[in-house]
Image 1: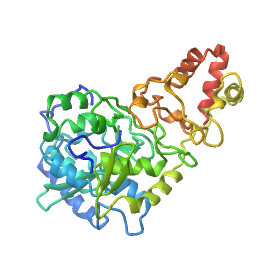
Image 2 (image 1 turned 60 degrees about the vertical axis):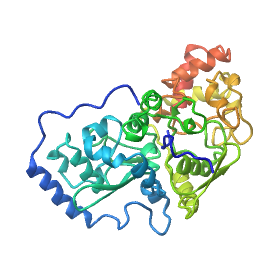
Image 3 (image 1 turned 90 degrees about the horizontal axis):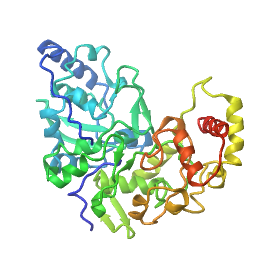
Image 4 (image 1 turned 90 degrees about the vertical axis):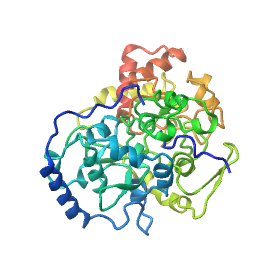
Length: 407
């Protein structure tokens, strides 16, 4: 069995240190007692088992709350429970991209909570309010076990309460989460070479191959919506949705399950398998996620109609972005030189090529390309215009951009 435990987990670090705890507290002991009281009331509405899905294997529950048994890694190996209790206040957590589910909070609690106290983070975890993080907290408010779920990287919030706090948006890539910086806090990952890699990734990026080949090449966390009918999920076309879910759950999150692929050198078979029985339900939930649409009135319909003609004609887009998925991934893969893509990520893969990215919901997840080298849709158009010598006019580019915003 390939040993992947010593390397970083997650799916998807910056050099910026988290903000220091402020000298002044938002509230004192009375507010903390009020929060504790709210927790006691809220606990009656919580699930009996906050670390796993219901027996019906509901895909939404799995996506949001199932750790696949990865607490052993996050608690016993990385000791992130100790890090959070000691040093991660809500303000620090928000600064590294963690999100808070407003629907899990008692009304008005944030108005009195001390956002500079790690004890408040523990209270939020006890409320099951931190998106993608599951914790068991004892009667003395100590975190005894902690793990992560798919939602950590593949959900965000709508910021309706405050930046980083709001209603969940499942399937949206969390482009503020800083996985490398979070991992760099672990006492198990303090070697200088590990720290250098982890702090080089930056928000929204993760390297899911570092613990296989030791190279450093993070990519942007992709959306988990718009996948129905897509043949291959990974940027480099290794497999479909459930393949990637299993790969991440077992080799990155370090869940207790099975993942076998001779191409990657993985032969991990663990009993009980807490991953494989849940893959079908998880996939169905992901396939059912709604694709975000532009706000009413946000699109120039006439320009978009002209852009559709550019897409199908002068832009050459429709030669690869085909069918209902707008991807030819089920037909062929592409060498990096075909489209001018950065080659390292492909070279590290089993296919040595890139799949054509599906285009659903493009407007909502910049930057673009696996390495984020195109900050805007216009940058994408300019890249292909130059690399493929398309000769598009300025008007054609503007119209094509408007059309891409509708997908």
